[in-house]
Every structure is written in C-alpha cells, then in structure tokens.
Image (spheres, rainbow, N blue to C red):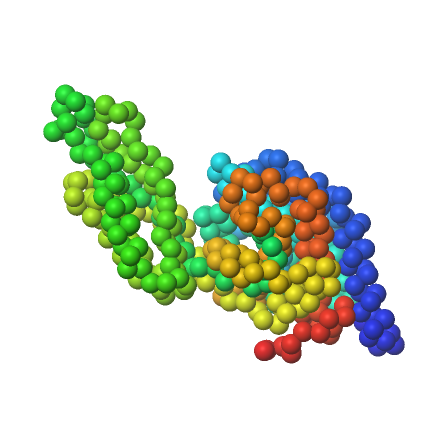
Length: 397
C-alpha cells in the first residue's frame, strides 16, 4: 500500500479488488468445478483433472509445470517472484464408487480462484503465488510424495478450504495409516476335497473378529476400520486369495505407531489360525495430525464471517474436523490452515452419495466464491501489513 494512501482506504480498495477478481472469474471457476464433478477420477488417475487445472492457470498467465516432480498427475503453477511465498493446494481426486463425495472439485476451484485474485497483488506485495495440484489425497498420500521430492519447502503459508456440511474453522484430523492386507492359502473343491484347501477367507473372518474384540480396549480418539475387497471366486471353491484395505487412526503419529502394531497382530492371528500367508503393504506413508497456524486461522475466520459465513453451528464442533488428510504432513513443515466451508447439508456429510450431489449447485457455487475470496484476503493480511481491513493476532502467537 502506498504510504500516502490512508490505511482504511487501502484496505477497502484491496478487499474490493479481491472480490472483483473472484466475481470476474466466477463463471470459469464454476465450470471448472462442475467438469471435475462430472468426470471423477480416483487417486493417481486424475489425468483430466490435472490437465484442466494446468490449462486454466496457464490461460491466465501462470507459469505451469505438469507432471511435477515426476508425478504424472501433479501440477505446479507460479505467478510472480516475490520473497513472500503463498501456496494454495488443489485437490482433485474422487472416491471409488462415490465420485466427488468429499468435494475435491470445489477445493480445486476455490484454490484456483484465490490464486487468480492474489496474482493481481504479486508485484506490489512482494508475493510469489504458487498453486500445487496434489493427487491422491484419498488414501494415496500425494502430498507426502511431493514433500519427499522437495515440494512446499519454504512457503510462508500453505492454505486450502475443504467443503463440509457446515462451516468449521480448525481442522483436527487424525493421524492415519492405510494398509493393503492380503492372505494367500490354497484352493480346493469345497465339497469333494475340502481337506486339501487352506481357506484365505477364514483368515479374514478371524482377523475381523479379533479386531472387533480389540475395539473394547482401544483408547479414546482412535479408529480402526476397513473393507474386504476380495473374498473368493466361487462358493464351491475354497478361497485361495483374499484382500482388503484397512485404516488405523489416532490423535498423533506417535500414538498411531503403537496402535498399528496391535491391529497387525489381529491380522497375524488370522494367518496363524488358518495356515495362510499374510502380507500387509502400506498404501502410503502415514498421514500426520494437523498443526494449525493460529494467526492465519484467525484471519480466515474474520474474513469468512465478513462474507456472511458462520462458525457457530454445534455440528461444526461435533462432526466436521476428525477426518484425516495428507495436508497434515504439509502443516508439520510450513505454516498452514485447513478450514471447512459449509454447503448447508447437515446431517448429510462427506463421503456419502448425497453429499456428492450437493457439490454442484447454488450452495456449492457460493462456497467457491466465498472460499476463494476468504483465502486470498487471508493470505494478503498474513504476509504483510493488514491490507484488507482485518487485524489478526501478532505474528508468532
């Protein structure tokens, strides 16, 4: 802000510029979100989503890198070369069988919209605006792979807004491990030669019974859940191979480590009892708990409320913030926030088919507009003097 412009005037001007930018790009942002919704792609398969993200940003002058860091569906886009670096996270993977029931199509549009608004301030505010297209949040740990290859390092702030039933400010996700479980036995005719078989499905049944009993002794703040994805081929053939996917969650990575060992012993019990061979393979590195930057979060809440958002729903505190995200791993390295932006659907919530239906339409479109504006305004105030009219706590609190 020029020193001869009163702060109040400069703040109002900056806010107006952000809102005008979001309004100007509203149509293309909504079209982007709707196309992602209509063409869901699961983890590591987001080829169209990555291409559309790259095309949209390149079309507005961003310097875009596709297949970023050797990952086929990762994207990096940059505007400006300032000393203060803002990173906006684009997620675009969908859920198997459920489509965009977590609203990643809206996350993508919100982050791109915020980046377009911030680009207009890059030169005057000494900013580098960075957009990261991050694949495989739904269990694949895309951001962790990117971290391991050097992404995000040195950002002054990493941010995104995640759709949910209601607005909820602070993410408090569990740390989580994702495992592929496989038993191998020996096939045999179930009627003629059952004694020759080694039943891999029995191993899974025993493991699930052991897990059910284990839950009685689990500490508060933990979760164990999963599905069996392969149970056999025919009712008259003893199953030779069974598979499943299992998640273990705890409050912290430290707590997760001990719980993971207990869960694996339950799977080992199935193998010992049946004589099958067990293989447990991590699907990604564990997701971390989240470390919220309180100053950035306070700025986000103030800006979101100024746009008409409300954070006083009881559901916001009871149901919204206990999922897991690889954004938690990013938050351990750089300052970060991960607020939820509501679609007004409670009690319908994420990972339900009905929630996917709400990720298009009027409420979803308003979430894109409000989320993009709130993130951009937050970033501007976080990295410099309060330029948009909202004061947050001092840096370092």
